[in-house]
Image (cartoon, rainbow, N blue to C red; front, side):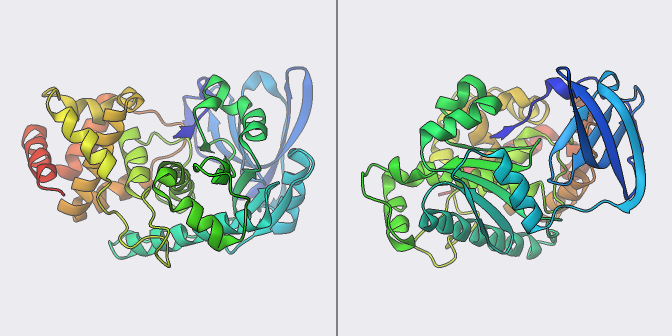
Length: 374
């Protein structure tokens, strides 16, 4: 699940070319408080609104009414280095946090270092496996421009207190999430929710605890969110672009089943997701004739377990049965720019351009293919 606060960006609809490589400095006043944003203007809207990415990777939607001053200088835009980023993030977080850096991640945590290291190892295995998987299929991901950030809280109480601002009332049912606005993952130490009261130990003990069947769903959720973060930082999707939800969520589900006993975290990336397959097959008995078209055009379908299951199934079918067409479609999705909306008709046209005009025939092929999956 991707957390996207839409209310702040609804007025930014008409786009002009994004700014160049110069460092931009925007003074804004929001809720009677002035603050300065140092970064780069990603989008300029015809109404004067701005989408600004600051040096810590956070996106800010700034309305014309909020702008006090906008200027640029000759210094080129750059993301914070690891030391600068750690300093900025630790000031934002409650007292007691420290950082752990891996090759591609900066993990801010107030749990045990062993658990933070376990998270870092899992994320790096996913990152490596993800890159290899798509490179072997003709879509080579790019490296992210900066370190990927994860916040790991020691327990659910402190996590909920922090995440309330992003999740609202849903905080009690969501154990981790990726934010398009901040580009960060936020989660908490799962060893207290895995059906055991075992004291946190070293990485081996943590892996054993979280490899138990009762913990599978919680670990899969974290991998799901980590996949979102990689996808939006490796050139496959751009944040705030009009990516169909069946694609973004279906891809995350496609990768969400780790095998923690395997040395690289997965024995087979993209293996059949048994719970999603069971849900999809149960749905087939009541599936309407226009289900595929609804899934392609209406993101609201992803408010149900059946919508997630069908999204996973469609990705699984297209990746395995139509790899060249799927690659072409992904290339088109990667070119979508932030805040450019599309209509249901445009979504259908893009899909048909990649996979053929006859949706009815494709749907029958899709259902037949999935009926043989085991």
